[in-house]
Image (cartoon, rainbow, N blue to C red; front, top):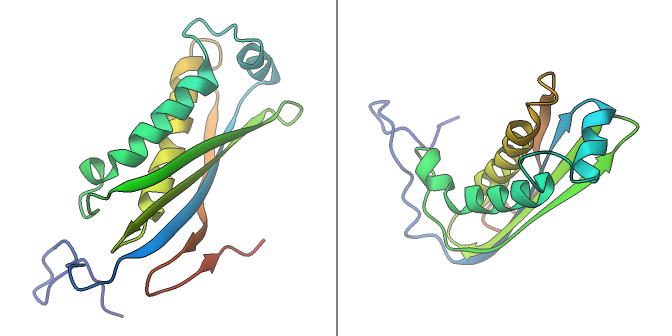
Length: 158
C-alpha cells in the first residue's frame, strides 16, 4: 500500500487535491473526559472558577476545527461550512462525552477537523477543571462517521 503523504523518495509531501471534484463532506468524531462525579456536578452547577466549562469548550472545539491545518502538518486549509460540538453528561459514570460534526464542500475530507475539535474541547474541559480534579482522563477520541469524496461513506461498527 502506497502512502499518499510521501513522494517516491520517501520525503513527506502535501497531497495534491487540485484535480479532485468539489463534493459535500461531513465527519463525526467523539471522545470522552472521565472525572470525579463531584467535578461534573461543579460543571453542571457552573461553579468552576474559570467559568462556563462546556460553553468555553464548545468555542474551543469550533476554533480548533477551523485551525486544524495550522496544527497538523499535512492537512489542507479548508473552507469549513459547519461545526457543531455537543456534550452528553454521564454524571453517574463520571464522564462527559463529546461529539463534533464538521462539514465542508471541498476537495478533501474533514475527518482531521472533527478529531481536532473533539481533542480541543476535551483539553479545554481538562484545563478549566484541573484545579479541582487532576485525575481526569481524556479517552476514546475516534472518527465515527465520514461522508463524501472518492472513498465514500465510513461508519464505525458498534
